[in-house]
Image (cartoon, rainbow over all chains, first blue to last red; front, side, top):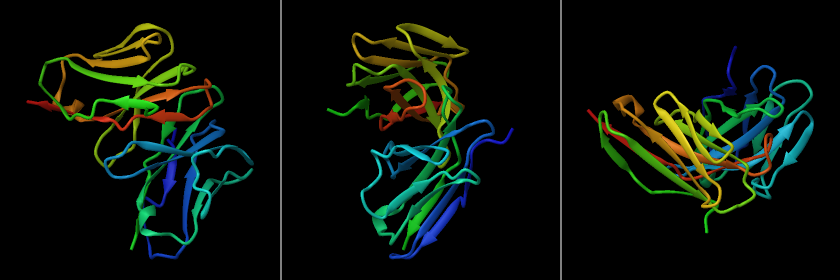
Length: 112
Length: 112
C-alpha cells in the first residue's frame, strides 16, 4: 500500500518562474492537505481539498499560490512567479473520511 | 498568543531515561490532538493520537491530555538514540477532516 506520493522531491526554480508540485494521496484517501515548512519552523497549513473542491484555503497566500484536486489525477500546488521567500519544504498529506492524516515525503523547493 | 506552543528546546536526555515533551494550545474548541515525529530532512510521521482527557499508552509512548488546562504531553520511556528527532504537537479543532495546527516542534537528543 503506497503512501502519499509527492513529486518532484527536489525542485529548483529561478525567480519569476512557475513551480508545480504534485501529490497523489494514499489509496482510499479523498482528502488532501498542503503544508509549508520553513527551516527551523513548524508546519504551516496552506489548503485543504477534496476532489474538485477547496474546503479550507485560509492558509494560502492571496497572490501567486493556487491548488487543485481534480476528479482524475493528483493534487497540484502551483506557485506562480516564485520569489526567494518561497524556498521551503512543501508537504502534502492525505486522510480518508474521518481518518488520520499521513504525510508524504515532501518537495524541497529552492528558488535561485 | 500562539495557537500551539511547545518548549523551544532542544531537549537532551541520556539513553534509558524518560523524555517528557509538553504542548499547550489556545483554542478551547480543539477536539483532537496528535504527536508527529520528524527526522531531519524527512516527513512527519504520526506516532500518537489522543481525543479524551487522561493517558493513552502505546509501547514506550504515553500521551496525556488535560483539556481544562489546555495541555497535552508525550512521554517516551526508555529513550533510545533512535528517538532523536523533532517532535511536533498538532491540534485539530473541528474533528476529523479539518486542518491540523502545529507547534514549532521540539528537538530531542538521546545521548548514548
